[in-house]
Length: 125
Image (cartoon, rainbow, N blue to C red; front, top):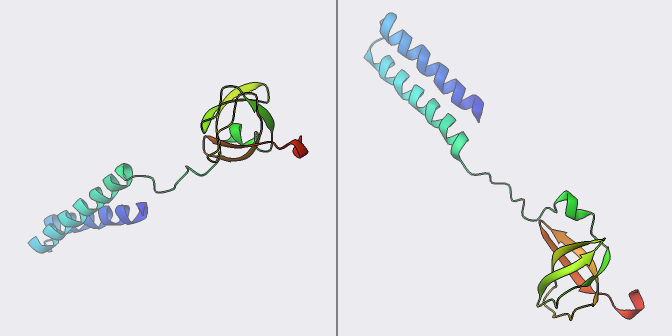
């Protein structure tokens, strides 16, 4: 898209110079100004437009390593709270269930900065 803005800027400059010095007429001068304004507008638009890529589903690298790790809840999870995982306290979420303090949990997925845990059943321990 940047190349299109540059093309409009160059065409605008060429037409303006042609309109002024080469006697191509007032039409070329006006068209040159229009192209120049379009080129400037495109460059401005590229700098202020919003990023369209959704990164909310991508796990943060430092949290991605917690996937499949086992820990335990500190306060109760209702359904959010804090768990002790890999020697550090982290904010976690359950998939809706309430868990009492001291419940063994396993990280099932990491979405962005959200760490989703499930209760670790007796047979999984």
